[in-house]
Length: 406
Image 1 (cartoon, rainbow, N blue to C red):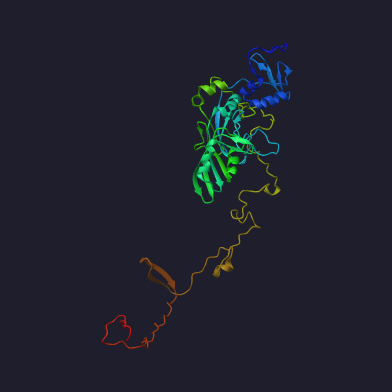
Image 2 (cartoon, rainbow, N blue to C red):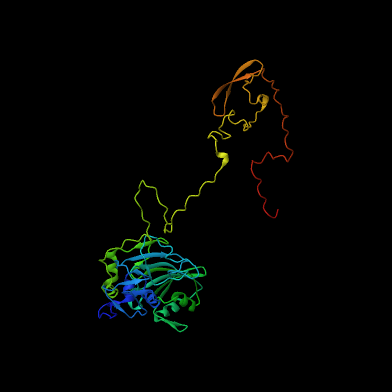
């Protein structure tokens, strides 16, 4: 399109160009155009039926359209309790609010429900996202399902021919029972269309209630051992090989363009240290910034206080009101706080040799006369316990049993 409003014969759709820049998907770009947020060569447009070239100047909300970036793909292990959307009117958390701030602006390839977890593909190329979402691409999506109830395998085999539920036809589904765990079943589901809540609707049609749903693969990309909530980028060489020539041609993916440097709004920047006084800056946009330190409240009691004023460290001269309360027993109870020495006990000093429990000999000192020990008490002889006398003609042991009948 030139300045006179004439449309070029060659070019690409405006929504496709916006999607390839990584700002939004094609559908979102079309909604922006209908809302009047997109201008071409200074004129607002209201219809996405417009072809543009590299010579046209495109702005969105007054900001110029960024240059195209290299096509990139990320694997994300989505946890439960997150929405696959950019924003939610009800204020529920989304996946984009939990992504690392160093990542570029990404678009999800397909969606996962609020309570569904597992592998979610993210890309910065809206055209690639659109191609991979199409059922015609034929990429297989595998799920592990935990459901409450029971179902025979022959009913699961019948899903390979497709099923129609409430007027919606679902294509071929490959389902199998993995194991039975009490009143629950673990199943594997493989679908190619990925319609809205397809797995849950089909399971409900079979009389099962889904209690957990995990996507384990999307096409050639596997969840494997990716940690929950983690993001991993697919190398460019591997991505080109896995997509294949057909998908690369349909999406017009670009693997030779440079990787754009993240903007300061998404990645924290560092400034060199200078000797000049720092000027107050705006709050950092980082999502995980450390909280500012709280100022310590002023305390008048701490002024003029020495480090040795602790009750267990200070000397008595420095803390006359904080005397240690020690308990003394015996004769020292009357000499508390004085330097009076304890008098030795009276009597003649004598020594003795003792042996401890381990057989070691020790010399001890004692005072006074040894105590007089009482003579050992003699116990009376034990009397024989009355009872029956043992026969002299029988050996010791148990009495032999008498035969019955005698």
